[in-house]
Image (cartoon, rainbow, N blue to C red; front, side, top):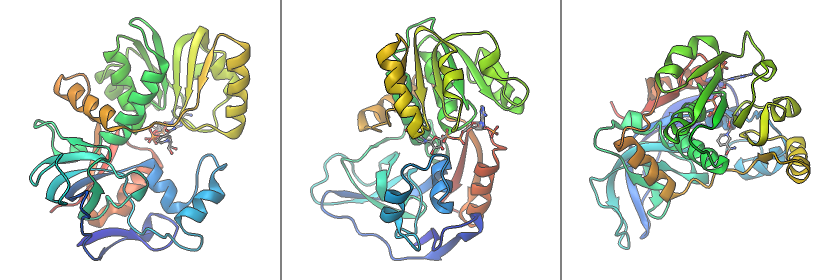
Length: 325
Ligand SMILES: NC(=O)c1ccc[n+]([C@@H]2O[C@H](COP(=O)([O-])OP(=O)(O)OC[C@H]3O[C@@H](n4cnc5c(N)ncnc54)[C@H](OP(=O)(O)O)[C@@H]3O)[C@@H](O)[C@H]2O)c1
């Protein structure tokens, strides 16, 4: 099969298309013909081995490969079609269109992928193309996780910092579907599209500091790394919730203190990315509550360009790589 590989850590230029052996499913696995995979910020961070927060650098390097990547095929989130299933798989059958997460296995940048049937996989709603479906699992699962952690009540004022990204664009839609009044924060050129998917208010962070507007919120989801902890906690109402997508060690320590000493609650919990949550997202798509925001779709041969677009942040929503002609 063809796969987009990286044999060394580095710039988007290290991505190449090469022939690699097809994977074979074990008894409990499904073999999926991948149609499309999201090019995520995390893929770019793994490729370059540069992260906005560094406390997990050493264990991650040992896991991924000290001198060169141990797993040369990136890709954690995808959509495709089951082509065969192991003897003990009853949940899926050939022909089923699935989307999901490969968890730490990665490998969704290859034409074929084998995953245990109990992984976070669900059927793609009929109305959604594979390219759009590939944009759902990362952003949708993480946004749903954070919005559930926030315990949103109808009428809550919710601010999403980094609203134009993969996770933020779903968080805007999910918070709206929960009845919140949503403020989106991102670069000014993304305003129209963010209002279109439901943002009630918009702040252009390149012109205005969103923490200095004299506004307070019931919930703040912050997907932007290295943010000013105190400034954001100060924007919360009494009893407000602050969710940090990219916590530093110092944020975790300060969160413990805030949670003990005030009525505000700070959450740094990673998403579990469960099957049940992915099925909930499929139902939300069918109900019209959310829809993936796809910025551009690139062919396999332009994977480097796809990563460049993710890294230079000129996009609104998700960048997708198509793995079919
Ligand atoms: N905690 C978790 O469970 C979890 C899970 C997955 C990923 N992550 C991490 O979360 C991060 C972001 O996730 P993502 O995939 O949603 O990223 P993303 O798609 O790159 O979105 C980030 C958005 O924030 C905007 N932005 C940049 N600087 C900003 C600022 N100062 N103020 C407001 N907006 C700003 C960017 O726009 P412009 O740069 O164009 O202005 C972009 O639209 C990644 O580093 C990833 O590793 C965490």
